[in-house]
Length: 252
Ligand SMILES: [Zn+2]
Ligand SMILES: [Zn+2]
Image (cartoon, rainbow, N blue to C red; front, side):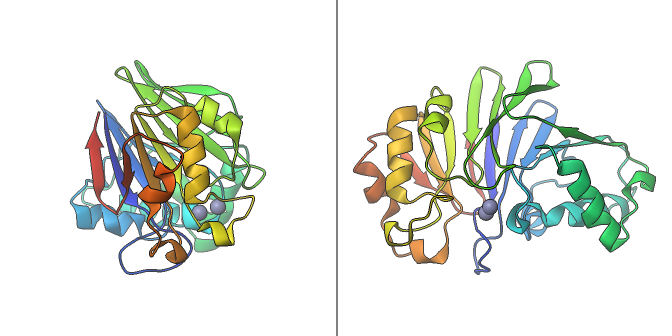
């Protein structure tokens, strides 16, 4: 199983971080977790094949996590020759189908006529979905927006947990226990703490409970760029930490 952090940024446009998007690949499954603005072009810049993505899973409906879904749908029809024919599954919390409809209707993207079957699967929190033989995705509600979820991806004897955007939640930390990689949002310094995002110190507390083999942090707003994130985390959590950049990748 391979994890690539394609986009490690936020709603703030910065030079080196596009918005949220992370690719998990295992066997024939290539699932993109979130799909914010810039993710499709960053995939191309990294030399990662965007044409053969099999699934897109959205954690919530904020623009910095969904804006490139219309970009990719358009790319799969008009940006490759021959156009895509392989099926695509879009996964997300309840409301995902309405979101896709509204975004694409506004832009005149008639994806139902694009020649590749698209299935939209709304997962209720706690539900598990089989993506391939032994490869599953499970969601869990997190405190950010009402629909927000975290995802567990499990397959080939490995587990990746991606928090999406979340505030501090001890239950989330316990749910993430046993993960090989905990890909955790880390938005703001403690001086700007808010209940719907995490500070490095809170990420450290979550990791202390979850004890992942590797803690990978993402979704850093610009005020964090001058903070020593690993040091702040290390005050709580002793395990290995990586502050991800666009294109960071690990093989499990
Ligand atoms: Zn976000
Ligand atoms: Zn958000």
